Image 1: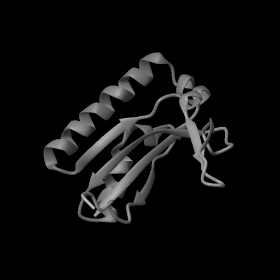
Image 2 (image 1 turned 135 degrees about the vertical axis):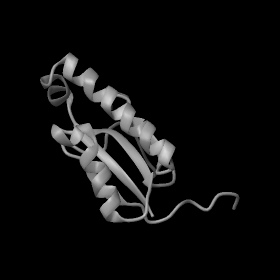
Image 3 (image 1 turned 135 degrees about the horizontal axis):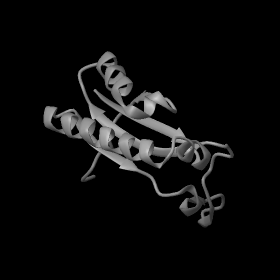
Image 4 (image 1 turned 180 degrees about the vertical axis):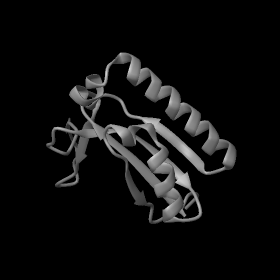
Length: 120
């Protein structure tokens, strides 16, 4: 089963822990990702660009309209995500608890429903 781990935050939250702690958090995350890659459980892990770079596309009347994003009007935004392929929700929760970001902001765990049918 595939699961997505989502980490939310904002610039205030990310800078509040200090540069040295943030650098250590990144090193610990890289080490965990390497371990999960070697076990075959890591599908991918991605940090997202700053939210000022987000765009929203809507097609109300069939014509695309592009506006600045992100869609959510919230203080916090999605900062990164990881996709796992592991045996159970319990295992995904165990991995999320080991993610260094869980100490500061929490890690949301969501099952992925299905994959796109490629080569239609």
